Length: 72
Image (cartoon, rainbow, N blue to C red; front, top):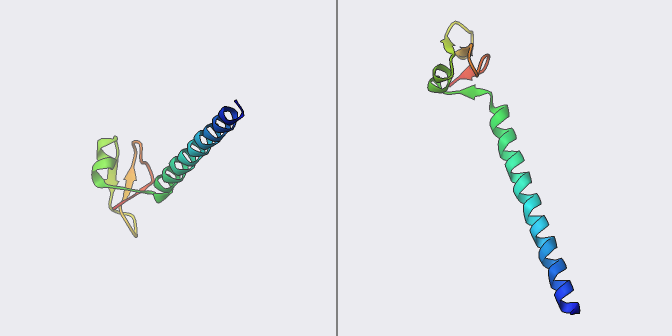
């Protein structure tokens, strides 16, 4: 009886730890994508934007979902 309780506690702890690691990995992957700040020309135009090539350094997506992000 005591072994069952110990095993149940071990499995519950392992399950919660695994869930926490999965959430941390997802959050990290999402933040890397969000902070990149550049989109492809197809992503810009497919989501309602136009490519502004008059900017000094890199072309910029104007309008649509990716407004203001650089285009690679």
